[in-house]
Image (cartoon, rainbow, N blue to C red; front, side):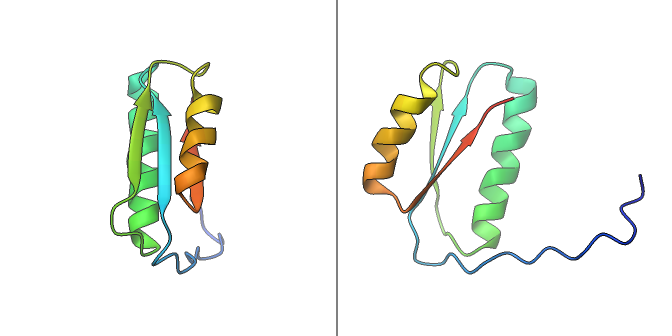
Length: 80
């Protein structure tokens, strides 16, 4: 697929927001790429330093995301 004709993506202005990204350590070869892109997207939207939290597996994600939501404006979870 060439991606030709795809609309140009425009990131919203998220400067000033506190963003957290939670990712598993399970399936690192996949999740590391997802995490890298999530951090790059957050920075591209104006978030200077998103909080990144790694957890062992997907079972821990809901609890960690719920806790991160208390202190952040947005929470992103990266799972395969």
